[in-house]
Image 1: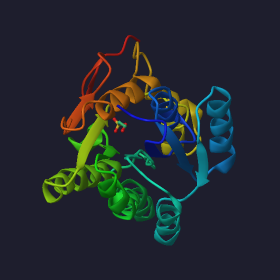
Image 2: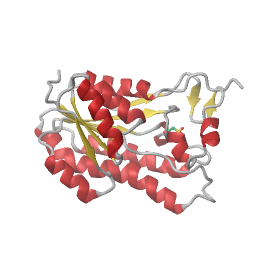
Image 3: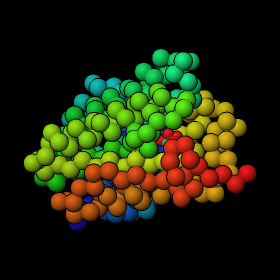
Length: 254
Ligand code: 8X3
């Protein structure tokens, strides 16, 4: 059971899965600390949650790839019981032959080093809580590849390996490590960012797919995993829409 002070830090809380997760964890009784680069977005969400009666909500501007800023953020927290490593994303859909190394570097930094930075910085507080949770929002891209996806797939495999290795290394401490791997999720920004603002290309990803997952669907699985009794560790939960049988097998009604 959580108390009003039980604190969940959610990265990438400015939109999509992160914002939906913050809402659902607040509803579940957690004090949520919203983290993102875009302060205006998380400030608005914090106000919404405060008006809904949730206590102690904070909006904290932070780039998870900036280690010094992450360390300062961690030092400023009075407690942390749950860390939701959600910040991440894809850039481009290019072949290995043509992909831009700068895109690969950016994706590695946010999807892997961002998780590493936040986890290292908050692990002492999570351990001190006596009942900590590190949750990594990876992707089905962390478990299988697809053409034109290698840069993102490689980064998400990195996030998966980080979670799996951390679980091995800290067993025996009061911190569990959960990985949630979503497949096709339709959010406002994921594909738009991947296709650099090309809305038509972004829409094509979901063309004919009856019901891609929503941010709320994924937030639901995250909240379910986090709210299990502390001795229950959901190692890995893969969640896809019914219309997606694998990364490359999607039913489309066109
Ligand atoms: C997003 C899923 O299929 O675009 O993490 O890689 S996919």
